[in-house]
Length: 375
Image (cartoon, rainbow, N blue to C red; front, side, top):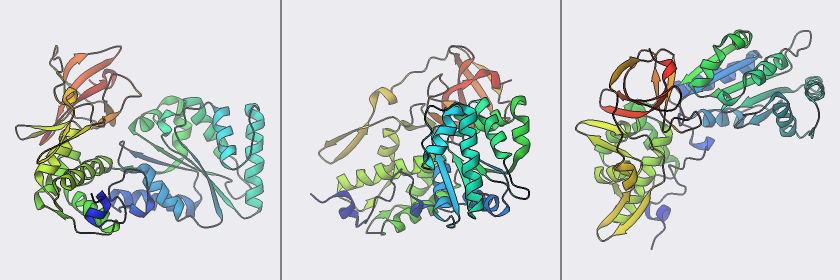
């Protein structure tokens, strides 16, 4: 049997979810974020912050940025930084090729300062990029502010880029970090794709993979946007599974039925004319091949019953509020609410967690939020 890529005539998987700068799609907000990072570099400002929901392409944007850096720029890239100041300094030094395990904070700071001075004398500029920066403790963020103070008589020795989910902005707005907030001169937000951008994104990814002989039925584009809410990562997941369903059916055309199977596999289904995003949107799925087609199933997910013990209307009181799969700050984010959004409280969980339903124009989202950010 032909392999999936060979069947469609692709040289690469067009909807792989691993960050690949060669597949970077320049939507309006991604262009703004990329331009902001380039401005940071050219102006030698101290801090840049990029905020975006999970799956909107923060990591891919910064990969595109670093791929195009000039030769006189060196950078350290730190991922998942739930680190103390000492651990963060160690991680940065290690990324620059300097072993410093077991030293105290003052010594680590001094070694990093000496490295920055040495690079500046050599005509180099240095960047530190921290992904998932919402996980940084407040004390570590404050140490970054102090680190950013390092400069010569006329030049900064270091520039810092923080990438994070909306909780990062909440954290930066806290009274403990007001001095750091004042240092941030470059700030950008990534938003979900519009319907037009979703169509252009799908066509762009397919073209980058070699175009092949795949055909997308016109109705599929609209449905992909509706099911994914314009989140790039979810677009990739839906399209990859829709292509696989078409492959199993032996057709080069991706049809509405293929996309509907893909949507079911990630827990998205229709209720009347609305899209319902169940809270386990990124869970694994089973592929069952049968005569005449493929069924992508997750019965436990689709049949999940949510108790509705409370019905009370509330309003989001912060700029961004994550809706999570479970009442846990480390749980997967399924949607991000904005200030002023109205939600219905369905039930209460541990601590201040509440289960909510948010109704958009043509979709519903259910999940858990921290009730202290509602009024």
